[in-house]
Image (cartoon, rainbow, N blue to C red; front, side, top):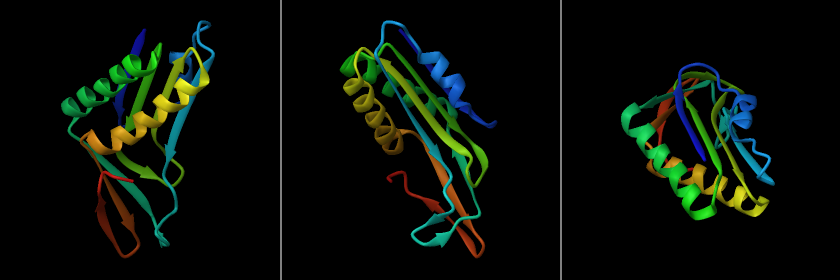
Length: 139
């Protein structure tokens, strides 16, 4: 079993994350990729900025990965999150997981993104043409 947790100021790679969780013993591999969209509630977004308290963020993301392994028997978990300035279309977060079967892969991946947004100290600022706002951790 392997866990790979990273906070990065450089672009994320879905190919890298998928390679980290591929396993011939697993029939399910699920990936969630969160990207920067061009609007929020009808208001055009220029870009996002992410900040994190890195030691605690890595610890909390590791805890999520361990819960995925315990609850859904995940074999491998990869969680990568960006920090810094992100343009429209940039990848903000990638969660990849491999499990014996697809249902566990889907369920654990959804659990991971939902829990990350609630518990991990990563903050998002949305920048608009006419201002900016810090966004609550919840979707």
